[in-house]
Length: 81
Image 1 (tube, rainbow, N blue to C red):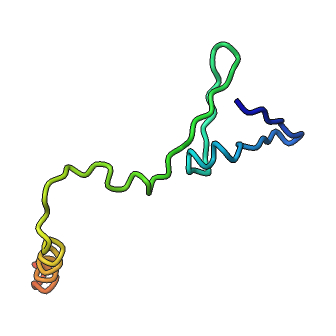
Image 2 (cartoon, helix red, strand yellow; image 1 turned 90 degrees about the vertical axis):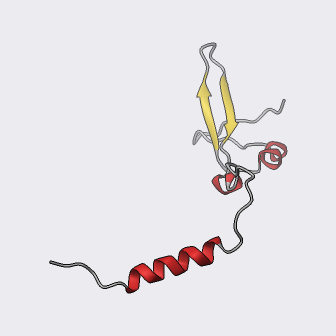
């Protein structure tokens, strides 16, 4: 447990030990019914990138095929009436 103070501007410092563990610069405060407060780190969105990966093998040429298909569609004449 670490003790910090609240400044006259209503600010406090998150201890460096917690900032290093959490690896974030944003926290959420939650008021509890017993009068205490809970502080939780807000995860960095980019750290979650790939978290939903299903582990399935991907075709290494998938991006190339998609770009080629988009190029074919872009080169087709439009159907304007």
